[in-house]
Image 1 (cartoon, rainbow over the protein chains, first blue to last red):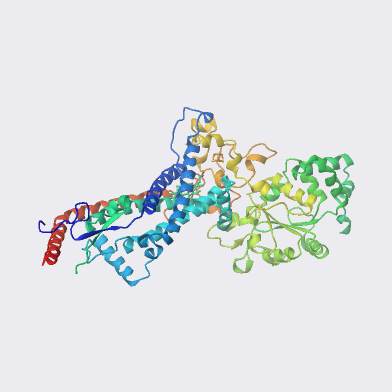
Image 2: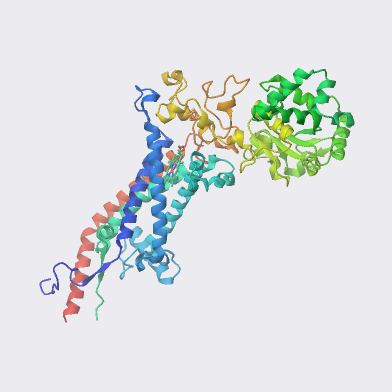
Length: 234
Length: 370
Ligand code: HEM
Ligand code: SF4
């Protein structure tokens, strides 16, 4: 180790270079999204299965359930607009956050999916470097995540349409007609909460796991934006 | 036949009602159809001058609860007169005629008044196996419906059966029960409910008589006036809902206090109906006021979304006790356990991996230097 030169103490470890992967808008999106999903799952769960609370007080003295629903709707709007922004940013941001990165149409992406699956499930060693941004497996799963978000937004606003005069929710009135009634919409909306909860468990665990096996700052990258890439030897 | 095509006023006169009865009826009708007092004159005029439309009321796969409901409208004068005064030319349950006579009556009405008669359908139409599950006079329900619908001026689907299939259409729907609007091309006024509220039915008919056209409908073909809001939106227990005060079991203190029935499976939050405003049996009560949650009888598929005592259906394929939450929580625990095992295995193999990586790095550094 002593023989390697340290060009700059603040820079990357020897043999690695710093890559600015997640731009500030992407990082802000990520944390707003994370916060919204946690709030939506928590408040949504309570809306579905309210607990016994404050039974000593009468109805005119409290409004806690209404407040929980309000928080759900507040987070829902934030969640929706935040996601819309990210959709747009996927067209104008840097190469790592573009939509083309998410859809595994190219051969190398499909190969990488298999490679990462092996590393994650069978715990084999990664052969050679994988993508510095999202690895192809993660990117493909995020397509599923965006689809799940879309389902929640459509079903959520469909349920919300009858409680609101807002232009946005009213635009979803016809979703109810499409399903025939709100029974299946509500059931689907509730069921999808579990997709998000499972996603959170797997996503957080795998971020830490990849931080460990790749050793190039996966976890810190979503805070500071930087990752490390091995220098190409010439 | 033709003698019955006169106005409501003349029909009432011939039945022995006097002018005072007639004006009383006009006022009631105006109130029910939501017409302001100043326009009462036009109602009186309509009933004096406009020819009353003949009505064909068909019964298919149903239990007759819609008819039963209708004849119990709050203001008996309205139901009586509607039945008396409009020309109910054909209806299996109430007509005196039978057999060939009855069928001829139906044919006559259709032939003589194309584009004028009101077609009311009670019950779903079975379409499986050539429609053999409901036949009248040797013809299938669908044949009769198509024949009557072709020249109908207005079509009304009474009740959930005719509007969305109701219990006959519950899975696996062996008879292929189908609501009216899926079989005919014209617009249909859907008046769902099992049964629909008597006064709502009376109001829809009155609206047609007074205005000569259908009331404003929503995207599911239901009159907006009565199906525009959820039972939940006008429920008198709503303050308890917002305050988070719920009945936990039917015999607890909270039930006695009249708290919200959401946790007892109330479907008020997804049911579009006027029960909490118009109420039932002359405005006496409605299910929630009587202490039971709404079962959502006017919503499509309410039979397939049971049990009635939880607000979301049970998870299909996992037995009646399992909710989406049971299934989700199980999956969540399995996932957590999986991550735990994975982390443990990773840790056991840690020494090997670290040694390998260090060796690799040393090698590549060595290469670079040389
Ligand atoms: C990650 C996203 C979301 C999750 C996990 C989530 C979760 C839930 C859950 C579990 C329920 C309770 C359903 C029940 O048991 O009846 C619920 C209700 C609801 N959600 Fe969401 N939701 C999300 C996003 C949204 C969005 C974007 C909207 C849009 C406005 C929305 C609007 C609603 C409405 C209107 C209700 C019914 C509330 C009521 O009955 O008063 N949700 N949500
Ligand atoms: S009893 Fe039913 S309709 Fe009434 S407030 Fe509670 S949930 Fe809503």
